[in-house]
Image 1 (spheres, rainbow, N blue to C red):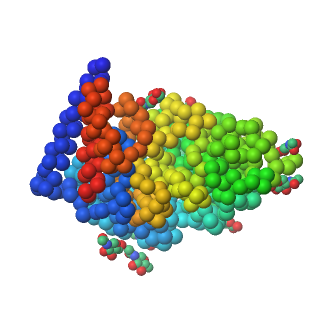
Image 2 (cartoon, helix red, strand yellow):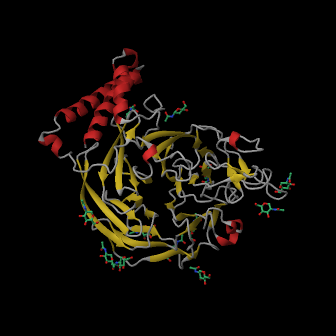
Image 3 (cartoon, protein in one colour):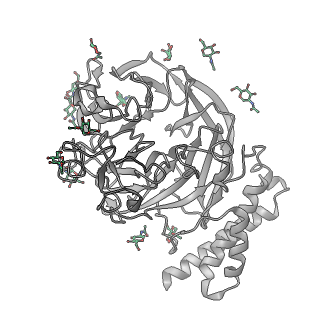
Length: 493
Ligand SMILES: *[C@@H]1O[C@H](CO)[C@@H](O)[C@H](O)[C@H]1NC(C)=O
Ligand SMILES: *[C@@H]1O[C@H](CO)[C@@H](O)[C@H](O)[C@H]1NC(C)=O
Ligand SMILES: *[C@@H]1O[C@H](CO)[C@@H](O)[C@H](O)[C@H]1NC(C)=O
Ligand SMILES: *[C@@H]1O[C@H](CO)[C@@H](O)[C@H](O)[C@H]1NC(C)=O
Ligand SMILES: *[C@@H]1O[C@H](CO)[C@@H](O)[C@H](O)[C@H]1NC(C)=O
Ligand SMILES: *[C@@H]1O[C@H](CO)[C@@H](O)[C@H](O)[C@H]1NC(C)=O
Ligand SMILES: *[C@@H]1O[C@H](CO)[C@@H](O)[C@H](O)[C@H]1NC(C)=O
Ligand SMILES: *[C@@H]1O[C@H](CO)[C@@H](O)[C@H](O)[C@H]1NC(C)=O
Ligand SMILES: *[C@@H]1O[C@H](CO)[C@@H](O)[C@H](O)[C@H]1NC(C)=O
Ligand SMILES: *[C@@H]1O[C@H](CO)[C@@H](O)[C@H](O)[C@H]1NC(C)=O
Ligand SMILES: *[C@@H]1O[C@H](CO)[C@@H](O)[C@H](O)[C@H]1NC(C)=O
Ligand SMILES: *[C@@H]1O[C@H](CO)[C@@H](O)[C@H](O)[C@H]1NC(C)=O
């Protein structure tokens, strides 16, 4: 009860602050907050209790993003290079681009980016290699030529090499590498290095590593695990995987709702053995079930693995069971295309971007969702179909991909505000909690209510006015009122 009163009081205080902002929209107080940016398409829909603001645009296919130690946002512009954005920051949702400068002009860079914890080494990747530069955060320039850290990765089709520096095992760099095609037979051969996630020790490194032959194998049979992050408390490595397109089984087309996209657990980097680490996760033979009833002759549950194509005496569902292939920890709706995963500081939530489908009649994905974690793993069971809770979505997926933002990279700033890039629209958005708490410190249900349904700005206003008048839902009502205010602001700006 005490906690509830505090929450209500702080929510009301925050509410009056934002009512103030709304009321003084045309005064000079708010003018510093005004922005000339307008979203390329309809403004995002945001779950109750959250706010989304467009903070930068006119970027060339922004992919991986990362803040440097001085608060500049480093953006990989695909096939262009790395750009540093600094912001005029009036706090909360008030952020506008102040400066924009090219850090690295290199058309081969396409996605991966990292920065050392001391802030003075910058890492980025091309389809072929991982590079590092000495970096000056004061001038936002590289102060050395590039050094090649990992090489020999050139392949076609899935060409991003996502980078993650471990906090639990300092000096280890995790690199993810996908397959060369939808169904890449060479991924069955460990020596090819296809569809693998590896960790490389950068401490006192003397020569470039060869991805195929060097490094610690964290997992293989991983079709295209573009997103990777380390759970902050346990140090567990989790990836999100883009699964196969156009799946058939026993002559039937099952691709609309199968297989599911995956959240995989690849063990720890601190030397502690984990049964998952280094295992084969299934590709290109085994895939995770999403809509089990649409898979002919299948008796498994959601998330269990099955064989595609014509089943035979060497490849069948027994080949794909847990004893033979590692199943994902969670499964998401088919074709949503997860591209990044980012834990909050407490390890209670993992944020996931879904770039959106192309291989499906009704578009799905095109959103930023959150998965609850506790004790180093997802709260939901592995057969859950509701683990990903939507926070920022497009208003109408039927106009996607052409008329939608498409989330890619995620990053926290030093105030715990969440940022995501949208490559298709050249935009960067910021996601805040309406209660003023840092998005990075609380899970999706820390308000006491899990935002179960996402509504558009307009709809959230309509549905919440009713609950705002209900005294039995005072907290929810206040939150909803904020959502309305922000909804209107977002819509106007
Ligand atoms: C967009 O960026 C290009 C160069 O990257 C620049 O020439 C142009 O002026 C920018 N447009 C706007 C509206 O900022
Ligand atoms: C990047 O380099 C290319 C070729 O050297 C040059 O044409 C281009 O203007 C440079 N772009 C920027 C933003 O410096
Ligand atoms: C910063 O960290 C990088 C990567 O660990 C290291 O190579 C570099 O020597 C460090 N720089 C300083 C000044 O400590
Ligand atoms: C910065 O990196 C670029 C491209 O990787 C390189 O051409 C340039 O020489 C580097 N600058 C310095 C000061 O070494
Ligand atoms: C990385 O290499 C250094 C130098 O050989 C070694 O001291 C360190 O233990 C290694 N780190 C890990 C996590 O294996
Ligand atoms: C790394 O190299 C430096 C200089 O040679 C040495 O002093 C240090 O002990 C080495 N560190 C590790 C972990 O091997
Ligand atoms: C890349 O592979 C070639 C052989 O295919 C080998 O000669 C070369 O040394 C490798 N490069 C690295 C950095 O391992
Ligand atoms: C490694 O991490 C795991 C999970 O957090 C932990 O249980 C284990 O004690 C750690 N091992 C070492 C050697 O620190
Ligand atoms: C069984 O199916 C797999 C995958 O489709 C194929 O590679 C293999 O050759 C088949 N084996 C037999 C004995 O037909
Ligand atoms: C399924 O494949 C396995 C090898 O992965 C084989 O041992 C088993 O006999 C096959 N089952 C059937 C029914 O063909
Ligand atoms: C979210 O809800 C679940 C289930 O009720 C609970 O176990 C978990 O601790 C909650 N997480 C947070 C951050 O409140
Ligand atoms: C916001 O943070 C404060 C202190 O960090 C905490 O007491 C409060 O419960 C949080 N509010 C919500 C809604 O999580």
